[in-house]
Image 1 (cartoon, protein in one colour):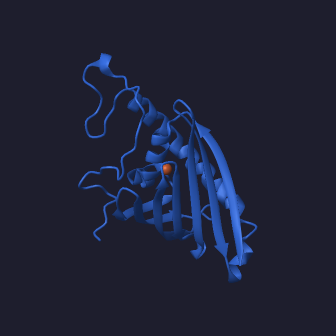
Image 2 (cartoon, helix red, strand yellow):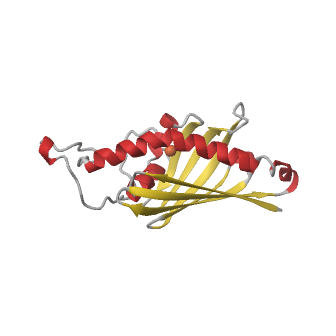
Image 3 (tube, rainbow, N blue to C red):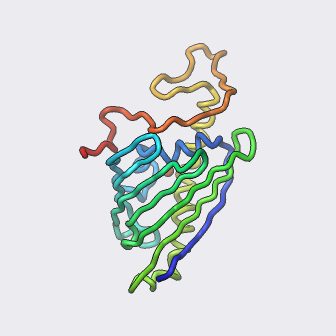
Amino acid sequence: MKIIEKEVVREIDASRAVVLWNYWDHEHLIVVHKNYTSAKIIYEDEKIAVYLLTFKLPVFSFLQSKSLNVMIQKNSNTIKVYNVGLFGLPSATTITVEEIGMDKSKITMNYKFVLTGWKLILAPFLPKMIIKWNQQVWEEDFPLKIRRQKVLRDGFKDFIGLPKNVSERIFEDDLELILPIVRHVHSPVNFPL
Ligand SMILES: [Fe+2]
């Protein structure tokens, strides 16, 4: 048995609430990320989400895979994601979001895959796949986070919009994320379980 571990650290001009929102906003997955082809939420509450994903494999993009994922908001700045998906490998991802300034965050993404049996031959390829996957997802998510940060500071509220009066379009308090994120009753990520 072998554990492959890879860590990626990035910074962005967005608050922790916005970075966490991006992880819990399941509806964007198939719209924004070209490698995800289906996302269905089986269960969600204020701390946990259980969901099914279908995705194209990094590097081997002609192959599709499915995963059952469990995402947990462990504390105010740590998310844990557990899944079995890529090549049937059990994996754990730990995402830590640290506010390092006003509307500025440092994100540490730690990936661990457990390899056993014939899957040990994947060991040399996995770090490259993780880096490629992380880079692509980061680039696809980046404009969403920057845009969300901007509109929240303009006083935007989900399902309500911006303040009608332009002079009131400013919000300077702490930004907070309330889970689960409210979805439309006919959201495409709903799943009948
Ligand atoms: Fe994303």
